[in-house]
Every structure is written in C-alpha cells, then in structure tokens.
Image 1 (cartoon, rainbow, N blue to C red):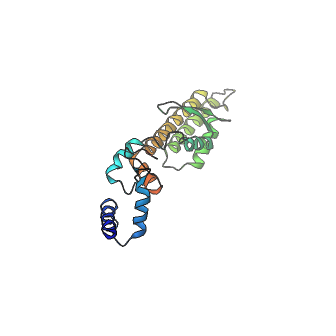
Image 2: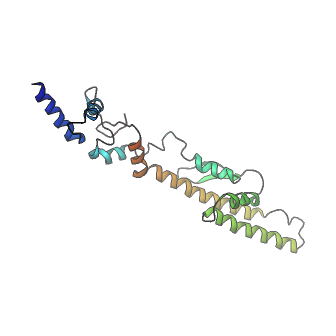
Image 3: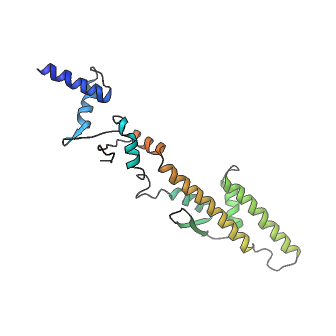
Length: 198
C-alpha cells in the first residue's frame, strides 16, 4: 500500500514539475511549495500555463508604490536641471538649478556621450547661444555677456522633452513582459491560480 502511494505521488510530481524518481530533494520542495492551506501555490518555474495570466495580473508591479523615475530625475540634476515632477503623460516640470543654460550645457557635454540626444541638443544650443552673444557684442549692446532668455528657455524645454522620453521609456520597460519575466524568474515569488502574488 505504501509503495503504491509513493509511486502515485512520484507520477504526480513528474507530471507537474518534470522531477524524476531519483531526485527526492526536488520532490520535497514540490510537496512544500505546491500547496499551502489546502490551496495550490505556483512559482514561475512550475506554472508555464499561467505565465500570461501572471504577467497581466502584475503588469504594474514594478511601478506601483515605487519611485521608478528617480534615476531620470537624478541624471537631470547632475546636468543642472531640477525636475520637480511629471504628469500622467510623463511631461516633466523643471528649471535650471542655479546658473545659466551655458553651465548646464557644459555639464551635458562633459558627462553625456556623443551618441546621446542630450549631447547633440546641448551642442546645438551652445552654438546658438554663443552666436547670439557674439552678434550682440558686435552691435555694442551692454548686456552681450548675459545669455538670451528665449534661447535658454528653448534649451530647457527641449531637454525636458528628452527627459520625458527617458521617463516614458523607463515606464514602458518596467511594465514590459521581459522585465517582469526576469523579476519573477530570479525572485522567489509565489502566485495563486489567478496569477496574483502571494
């Protein structure tokens, strides 16, 4: 009787997890993690039929109750732009921290690579701001050393638009199947039959 029960249990384990008879440690793990309080419990590995349901149910797991945008905010702060918040469409509000657009531009050119959109934008506005200063100096204007407010505002607006794309890209990644699959494979997450995290 006991041998028959063991054989039945091993067949069940093989069917659900692919565990072979000789691997008793995995069988023990199977028995401990598959059922809790009379209800079936799933992990990412033992629930291939539930993967899409798990992904759909937990789509916003990485962006709920987390400051997932903090990386973009810190990056902007390093180049002299303070992002004070963003709306539901990821459009950020911000200002130059202290100083001028030229100081921010110099920080971008020193810290961002040439392949970045922020680098190309900074190089473009540096040329525009310097050309404007030279033009006003040639016209003997008294305030030629002060950067043009309109160009500085346009530089800030364009940089905030680029950071909007960065924030939106982060959001799309954190809610993507790839990100969630990686998270659930590497973590010790358990799910119920509806795909909810336990």
